Length: 445
Ligand code: SUG
Image 1 (cartoon, helix red, strand yellow):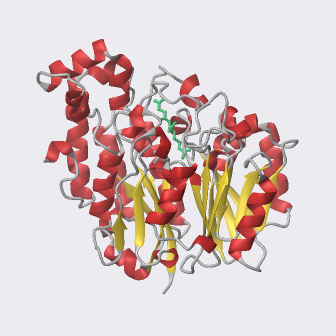
Image 2 (cartoon, rainbow, N blue to C red):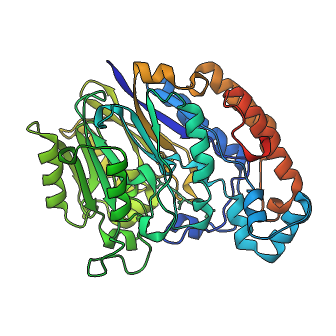
């Protein structure tokens, strides 16, 4: 049966803001306290989705989570009515408060890890929401994410949902940002590739010195078990600790794969040769395309500032791929020059399209962060909620919805205003109707 890669992009939430919450994420740190533009952010995301849909690619949306997370504030001991509680938390614990307001669920690459039915023993599509346990503001996403995934992929005949891994640093899991799949055709069994930053239980192993490694070997390994993957078709590799210390907080900031192609930086993995050999062995005889970007042409710093490797690598026709790239790549001399040469080189990458995603980029989220890849065959696709799939009509409806509900500008102080909470709930309530999600938000229970 024919299968497709469907990109599920996160809709940027109405509280999108810059709070400098992510250590090791250079953009988040550098833009802390900058004013944000939620409407512009959400529209930039929708434009990318529409452009991919217009190219004939399968595109869908994932809704944002409810923010501020008032349930979490109550759990942390804040009390009173909503308005009093928001004010109390904002004044007494500003960083905790900023954390429960973060619209970070927009980066759906981190929402979960998904294994297509072609790779799993029981033939079902497996989902594990990522615990995102390293950062508090992200660790509070997985319960809401799980509800949304279960609502969209509800049919138990086709879909299997796991709980997030234990929320301790030992099992830190950042989802598909550290997971890639190689295959001939999407519907055929593929090679699943998991990249971790460090070992949690073995201090003799190398780890980054400066910044956190958010994904552990133990977490990646647990997912391979939960998803019932074939060990011969599964590869685990360590990310370069040097790269993590240079601001590469997820593997999707330093490499991207699609079908039979891996586009990666020379300093992506702790041991490149071993990693590539393991991938090739698992893949079989047909040679994979390994496109290595040398550090002499593009430094890790250039990769981090432009998010070259956070491009989406999509198939546009048999054997031909396109990079969906942040605009920042065009404005960087080294990266731009590299990309021009890449187009005339003998690789499957035949086209590049640039997107303005500045609002998300300023928090360290490029094109690939904004999407979760779910490979679905035709039966699985029809078993999923149809209302989340992109169409000209849905694009128009969502654009109007954003224009109606979202603020142009948010300053730090605006986050404490109860009217923002009310506006956000009103918007999300309407969104659940547009996307036929049922009552997925705590305020709807
Ligand atoms: O987890 N930024 C996100 C960016 C996630 C990018 N995702 C992928 N690479 N797949 C993070 O660091 C910043 C929020 C703030 O500072 O306001 C933030 O959470």
